[in-house]
Length: 369
Image (cartoon, rainbow, N blue to C red; front, side, top):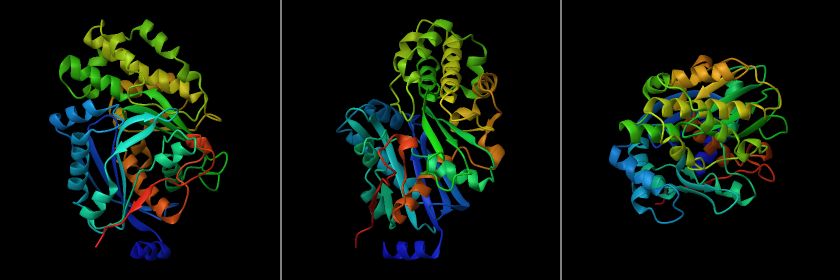
């Protein structure tokens, strides 16, 4: 840790972030050169997919508040495998795998022990990012907004914009780059928008034994069911003011709702649900963003993107249009946040998670011996 503190005192360090999202596709890992405030560059990236057998174990563990040893073993082994392939790393940000998230109730649970990874990798590992936020009254999610703020500076944005992450659950960050720091009032507003890839991917696995609707081909052949969508948009979650967050299974009833539909109509309905949820979320932005940059797996689905463009009142495009990597943005975010934790900087604030004050989450584990 003394070596890390010395490196931080000199300037930016190479941070390696890892993310395993609720879509359960695999582990993203990416290097970012950062001092926790400014992005100075990007490094290597890697992806390690989960096998069908691993994915089945992880999916079975969703919702578990204790136990889940088989899932924990998979998470730790997969991360150790992919993260060991990087050189020149000063610090690692390890998110782990979210199995359960109930900030207004039992809390939040991300499995995977950073102490294990610190021993394997031989560098400090920052982990357990969400618990402190929840304990102080926050939602514990989303946590990428402070990195999104840094990204707006890196791309030279001069007007408010929004980052839309379409993973298992959708989340949106509205950013005003004119504000000096991300934790200050008016800099960021963030919240989960609603269901994203998780219900659609689960549907595709059930109906077609496929991981996802490739290029939206199935949804493009169907028609959204108006009654299901009307029921969805009548849910109280969409009327709640942010900050607010969701568990992957908070809209699990959608699976039963689309069960009577054809494969194509079911896929079209779940795809439309993504766009309508985002449109409802846009009403909570302080003012319309100049553009929306989409990250996460959902941006690869042209039907989703077309629905967003037809529904939202501003330009929509993948983050690649701004020179960013939409597959690795969240992994980079946890590398950036790891540096913030090491420097004692906040990682969330009232307008991003609803926490009572700007705080820095995360536990730092250093290799022993």
